[in-house]
Length: 169
Length: 184
Image 1 (spheres, rainbow over the protein chains, first blue to last red):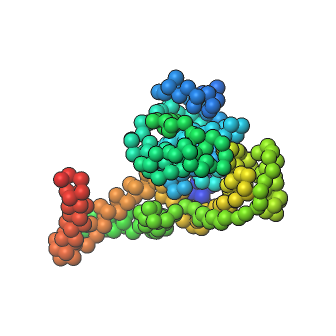
Image 2: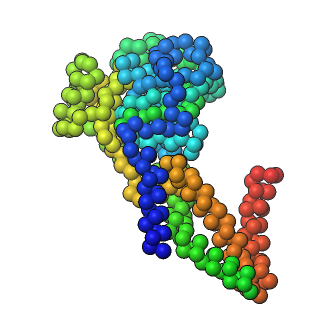
Image 3: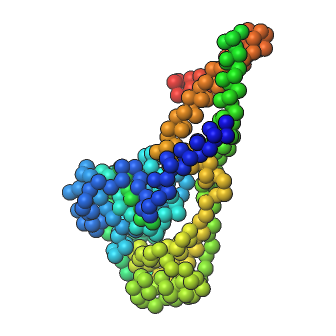
């Protein structure tokens, strides 16, 4: 039985070794596309890319806290980011990977917001109560381009239905 | 009788083999069952700090200034300006969210929840690969344990009496729940 125990441990160590070795970690199908799409370009003309498989590179700036079922990949130059949503449990992004560079790919999707969601987002962005009208003559937010100066909230949110990713160590 | 001996021996050996893993999976099962109430994988602690008004500058410079004011010597993983008013400084297991130019900082510390992270890693098969195979073997082992367990005892305490009613009750609970919650 002791031999059985030692043999089992050796087999497990060999089987698990590829996961431990290497600095980058691959998730799901990893990254298959050679070229990454600039996140700014993707978000500037989203309708051109909806339904297409795209790859984005950037820094992980947010991760689903409890389930690791999404992460936000952000272009560090512009601050624009796109959420990579994966099926719960199929791919789990570690919360501790925030700040690391990542490549992620999947199908780019547009999701239409409900009127309630649009109203809630508008209120939050314009800094007023839900249902209230933005007071253009009222006190402005400290920085220009915020509060009432913001353009109307988009009716859609865009995300990548992730099939795989590589997170650099 | 020979068959019963074989059933008992099989149940005993598989039981010994998988006892440890069953305990780990049970702990993780309870932990993940209550995921709405707590974070079973990470301990996240936040505190607000003021570092004073920050000058204009590139994200890297601003990040270095914030770290200097906080007395942090660690080299950041990355510094990203999310928008005009927000800068994020990512350290190992720590994220600083800085409001610009005021210098209000939300300092978030993250660490893996001791033991739970590991048991959840196994139970939720986060690692895939080898563990997928072993977890499949474990599932078959549980199936064998259940099937052999039913036939261990003969007579009134076995399937001929008390065992039968316990078996039926155990099956009825999920079925009744499904009737009420799903199939109505």
